Structures are given as structure tokens and as C-alpha cells.
Image (cartoon, rainbow, N blue to C red; front, side):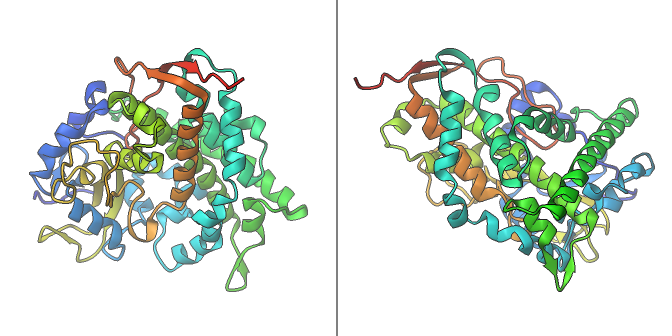
Length: 413
């Protein structure tokens, strides 16, 4: 591995081989090439890339050597204005224990599968409502993939569902980034994200003030009333939690639902799913492995960090490519095949270790319900999967639109 000699820059772009639309839609051949290389230092992006299953799992699990406290390493001079934003400094995704553990415990119990199961009937009503009256040609992302997760997380937070288009716009603006980032566009990216974060934090500051005066049973009220060792959460921690729950609570699930529809169409799974030859929950897990919404996560190397027996310089950025790890033949038999009944399926789509995705149970529930609702609404479903347009994101994997044709189910007389 090459020596790391300079301070790492923010990795807002993609590795050069993934910058074309065609490769963003199908990055998996490149992942296979890179797994053979082991741990790789990218001189252009000034970071280390990790592609194998065992190595990625190690980076995710070993927080003492691969830290989530990445603010300083990711903020060169031109991005320092983001440092004062609570989303950059006080979010649980950029913390290590013990504060991470304490903050996560405030909300963990509200995202258990048992707790979320009480929402299943209502989520199904929402999904059925979105599909009601759909016949013929329709666009699945606009119709189902993004409205359902936004509606659910808005209700959980106790904020107006009718503002879902604004919530979606804020979320998209925060995660969107061009595949190539350089001095020509970095200022625009920083300005856009700073403006969106300011709008979001201003919005939630007002919501927090209202909840302090009139607490309810929603998650924001839970956060406002919570304490850690007798001390309430700070204002910055509260704001960061609200932004994180809104954005993460809809973006990943939106793309997971879309990726399921895309993959089931590509591998002609609809009839098997309809006849229960393939359980929907199992098929969703295989999509998470085979076409995960989140392609990579970043950590910062600490003192004494090593990978493949080689030292990693302190403060170096390390990218764990989850999508590559999920297709590692050393961990998954027939790793390059989509097998919707695959068991076991220890994929890393939701991460691993202390930062395992808080919303994973909710994402699984919403996605299963969305697929089941679509199956019940249609006698026949077809999607056009040629000429798809990938998302403009350095770490998310999905498509902007998915055109389909739905033949409505004929109800018994």
C-alpha cells in the first residue's frame, strides 16, 4: 500500500472508475477487480479503500482504530463553515462511545422490530392509499418509493405529513453530489449543503420549542424529555438527532424500495413472490446484499490501525465498500447471483457493530409492506429497466425514476 502523506480531503466524489453513469448503475465488476487488490490507497481522493468482506466488517466493528469522529479529517479550509453545524458535530453517526452509546440509548427502544410491528397495519393503509387508483403507466419512485417512507417518519416525529415534498427536497439536497468533485464545483456543493442544513435546523428549532411547551407521544417529544445521567440533551444534539431521523429515515428506505422493484423486474421474480414461492422478506434481504442502497461508509484511522497487516496512518480516511463486501465470494456462495431465498444472508448493507443502522427494522418493515401492497394491487407489474439514470450521489446506489405498467387486480364480485 502506498504511504499516506497529506491531510485527507473530503471525499464527495467517486473513484474515477465509478464516475460514468453506466458504471454507477453497475459497479460490481469493478468491485470484483478491487477485491483482488486488497486494501488500496487512492492518490486522487487521498484515502484508503477496503473491498473484502472480512476487512470491511473489521473497519465497521473496530471503532477504537477506525473512528466515526471524522469531522476534522473531512473539513479542509473551504469546508470549515460546516463545522459549526450540529449535523457535522453532534450527530450519533459522527461519534464514538461513550457518548454515542448514551445518545443512541435514548431512541433505540423505539426502533425495535416488536415496537415497530404495532405500526404495520397503519403503514399498510398508507401504502394502499398511495397505490389506490393506479392503473396503466406509472412512475414508481414518485408514486410509492419516496412518499411512503417520508410519511412514516414524519408521523413518527410528529411533524406535518403534508409537508412531505419539502422534507424530500431537503433530504435529496443533502445527499446529492456529482460523481466528480474539484475546485470548479466544491464551493457550490458547500454553499448548497450549508443552506439546506440551516433551513433544516431552523425548522427543527421551532419544532423543539413547540414540543417543550406541548410535549406529545412523538419521537421529538421523547428526545426533548430525555436525559443522560440527569442532564438533558444539548440543543445541538437535539437538532442533529431531528435532522438525522428525518433524512436517514426516508432516504435509505426510498432507495431500498426502488432497488427491490428494479431487481425483481430484472430477475423476473414477481410471480414467485405473488405465489409465495419466494417470501417477500427473504427477497428484500437479498436485494440488500445484492444491490444495497448505501455503497460505502467512511471511517478515520486511529493510532495503531492496521489492515492486511499493513499500518494505516493516523487520521487517514478509510472507505469500507459495503456493496463490494456483500458480493465477496469468500463470504457468500454464488456471490454474483441474485438468490432471493438465500439463507443465511449476513450482508453488511445496514453496517455492523455499534453503528449498525438504527432504522434497519423500520426500513425492512416499510419495504416489505410496500412490495406486498404492490402485489395485492396488481394482477401484472412490469418495469422498464433499460436506460435507467443513476442517482447523483457518492455513496447511495439507486435510480432517479422507474417507469412501470400496472394492471390492477380484479376484485371478486
